[in-house]
Length: 295
Image (cartoon, rainbow, N blue to C red; front, side):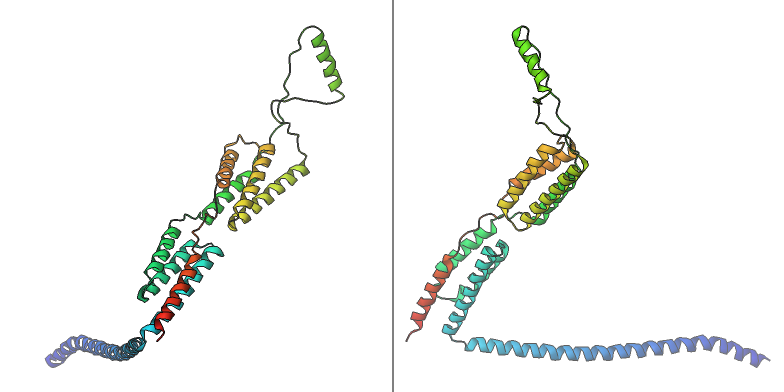
């Protein structure tokens, strides 16, 4: 009986220990697999690094084999392409930032070309001038126009102005004025202290709202095309319509009209520096380099 009791105690102590040993063996097996995978990855990375180093050495050797004349020709061709790209970015796309970057790269390409210091100075001067141009942000301006448009589309219409009543002087002048007033009942002539604003019928109000919406859309289109003249024309028409038909005393309408005035004073495409002469200077440098290479 004592023997059976001891065996039971031994089994209760051995089983947890055996489970721990099995868990450790599994963990060691997992670690071994991970180490094998890491060794394989390191081997692949070492092969890739070796291939990259080999290509780098080959490229360096090819560059060292290039004669100075060939390197100069390549640099001049690269600078010519970059200068033309800068001209397209400025004149066609109106992108001063991209034009400035192209000029910066062109100047760097000419660094190894003998006698290019004058051209590089001209390129750097034009690049600096491009970086100083402050181009209006179209997205911000379009948002301001959209906010003003939202207020104008729902702005209340103006009411007719009050009729000014003149006092009647005594004597024959008063009698003449009284007769004129009686005649005015047949031929209606009114003098008011503000421009006469006739009451609009519902269909006329709808037409007015549609015209305002069309003019606002046209202004936004001109804004996104950076067409300053067209934008100013549309905003001038909008302001005239608003003054004639909308109640500008409400805060929302007044704020929208102020936004229109601010937009109407902007220049969407500030003048960019003219660097068309850089191509002629580069052509002259290329001719000089060709003469220097002649035997």
